[in-house]
Image (cartoon, rainbow, N blue to C red):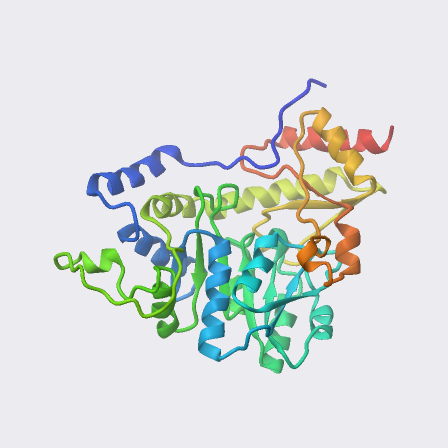
Length: 375
């Protein structure tokens, strides 16, 4: 079998349509906060059925903004607790710390998501919120977690970095949470260069978070330019430079039109992997609770001799990854022990999953996984 070169992630762009959208910005001479960022807020908000959306420069910034907003408006104290996961990209837990709050890890199960029972075990008098991470787009026990949070008076925040287009019972996962933070980073299902979007619960929060993301300034440059440029503004909060820009928004507007079809293709790829790896004793395929509606950002396995498999696949020209190392293994979170997460991070592997992957490529990958275990 001829050796191939198969990447773990390769984003697919409608290049000409993206360039046409960007050209409008360049010709207009407006590339920052402005008409395109407002367009993507409106269009993605309609897509996920959320009335208040704000386009930001990354998912990481968005998580920090949401927890900063909640701490300000709900009078949370320094050190109050947010139940999170160790199996996530570390920036999510860093963002909780940056907001002056304490991440407390609930352990995961074989879905790689936190089940409701583990979350309930971690609730203390200082718990204020739950940050749920639908790894790969997997809703897992989101419904039960929503019910728990309502019963216990906790805020449910969705780290939707992998969940653009994921649905549960026909509606966006955002419908189950109080706040959501999406990622439109370069290899996500809705790729740009780097950007994200957050959902808010009220018009008042939407206004405040726009100030926070623009250095605390009470009126952004685009708003001040609409009726003759107004230079005078007030700075009412100690804010951040987290705003999105019209170049990234232009790309996002194009990519949004391709999202559902792209996610359908990802689900088809996942089904191929599952069927072609069936019966292989050393491999456990991670199915999604909402398989028919999952964004399928990741295709993951729990395997024996994971590091050996990664090295072998690399020799065959096949990229793979680990999503994610248990954050408990980093020094700043070492006190937050999570036995299942800590064990599975030595066993999980992510396989190639992107729109430039052919059915034959999947067969090539699966054939070499079988060869590795049958040597």
